[in-house]
Image (cartoon, rainbow, N blue to C red):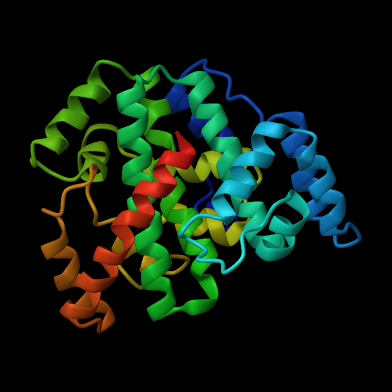
Length: 283
């Protein structure tokens, strides 16, 4: 597993210690770990996984609400976890459980105000909705994977901010002022970027290889080995919910992926309301 890290002779745990210092990365809750283990066991049924999830009312309600959201556009709403699990299938259910686990870790271990949390997840859902829409055009079989990779691509940022203040906070401010992209400033200052840190987190939390690779390479050039073009396009959307960054994305989508500008703008427009709804479900 995580061949892309082994090829670079990287020890993910050591690198996390270098970045986050003595901070001890929390593990996922026991129930989520058991559910993930069952999902990855071909001899376990989705019904068995659903029973585990049902023992957590909060997680159950979030999963049902997510499946009933506009992101899935179901004709008839699902009313229980077993139905939701059957609608999603193993891969998508695993992705949603991983997302829930990451959200829980960030909420427990980072000091974000409600407004900061809302902004973070609005940016994340904006990219996730866009990535899924682009994947439907470019590589349809990876829509779920693209959605999750884009949703979690910046999961390392709140952790780095928590443990490298104030220098990292100043770096983020420089990026917001348009000096350079965050990942470029990170490379310049530290020799790594938040995509690298995210890939080390993926290793610690046993993410699927393809998902971890897509997260790690979200700022790489489109077409890079292990990356997903849809995720790399969505990564061009800046933090926040304004449309000032779409012009560059439209140009890249046309030049690198052959998507007509009118089509790209239509996809982005369609994704806005979906992202708003998803952000409300996540915060």
